[in-house]
Length: 344
Length: 287
Image (cartoon, rainbow over all chains, first blue to last red):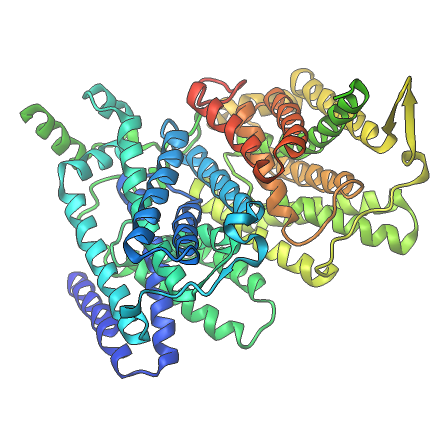
């Protein structure tokens, strides 16, 4: 029964995303676009959290850097290819720096380091005004001509999201994905199997960073404006709360989470003035009342739980605590990874 | 650079380091014992500073402002720990997210209550002016900050090493379950520590309001420094927080001087370097 609920709700979500905007006003389409762009950043955080067990509170630093690269390139009147090449280069560089700094840590320490890095990006965006325009930002960042129409732009974003989700699903079933989940479930076992745990984390970080970079490019095309606030702590934190609402690891989770957050923000902020307070209370309420998220309810027993509950995926940061650690739990993924490793 | 100028910059760095220590010591203690990354720590700091400014302006008494600010932040800390953090105890990610929500709420309510303009605290006569040593004049307030932080540091270290509660905290850092099975009410220790850390952050805000401004965004700015200090110093270690604060305080002062546009690299570079060479931080314990 639950399985059919899961399939039905997946179909419903996909159908809504494809059909509704086609017959909607421009304003509704802009909300849908915002949802997709927001979801894409959450997808990158979700991939890292669901696959590698690393929760990043700093992905807005990566997406923000990519967006700044595009914005700067547009201001310098570069062609589309050079804009995208620059964005790619900046994304890879920033993800590499994130990865190299954080790859030897996990759990809460990883979260703190990514948060600090995003704050550095934010501060740099503020101060390096020759390139970033400082506090006033960069305006007039027009998307390429082919994407000027809001409907075309929406379906382009939706297609990008679809492709990204598909590629991530392929990745998840590949030996690389198995390696990530092995690291998530037990670092010590993976390293005794001969894997380089830090290297795996670096690769996961860079792949997730690439998705964040795509999200950044789409978001700057969408808003046609870039300011430090796109790299702010709030944006990174929002991505994490979105994956909590959607259910960590569920592939459509970020879409549900983003739709709810964008919808609620839009609906409430037109009635109430103190939106950030409400957002904070919403955060707390979600975390306390619904820690497993919407997807946790909808898709719960689609597959039998193969590993520890997701919250223990945060793993051990330092010292011991009363939290049960995934190291102690058997894991089908791990067994599979071991099998493949022995074959190879 | 003349030695006079250099010594003033060193004092500037040390006094900023002193503020960072007041903030980072509470943060690191809470992390060490409770495994909570308290991202509302910067918001407690902002709240403390703002309350002190308002109360001092209204009553004319600095001391009353300081006390109200510390009590207010401690009270908010108490309510947050009891009401919001208890339901998600032992779930590390959810605890962090609760503190994120709390940070949003406190920062926004501060904006609502105290406005968006930068404000600073009028410090009492006794702390204004300067002290001349030879050919160098030091601002008295900055010297006082260094003395205050040093006193807090020594106090915390003595409490940790010499008292019963310090022993309980040290034992709790190593093994919470074992401590509670010895018949110690660890929940009460958690609450106490969280309230203490919040009060200390409030105190840091009051102290900072004398040299920095309190404004929207000051909370996240200072949180970055606190995070970096504890990452560099080693999570959970008071000594590490002290070392990290002095290091970052000095680096910040000199990088503002020499590389104003890129002063954030003074934060990033040492953190990256420490993490590559010693992922646990300079004085962090082995996992």
